[in-house]
Length: 67
Image (tube, rainbow, N blue to C red; front, side):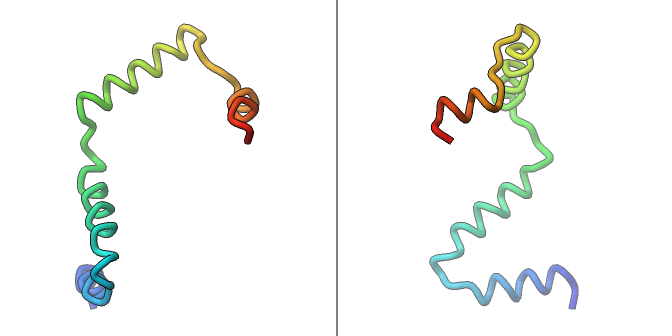
């Protein structure tokens, strides 16, 4: 059995209420290679924050969020 056939068999065996989650996951896999303009802008903004020192340590992040 090929991987594709195995995936089809697994999907066919899922309960109807599980299918939306599977559909979302498969859509994410399909889009994984594409970076939208919005995502690129967010990445650039984050990199700019790092360059300008606008960061917090992991310890500080955890502390402020009670983790």
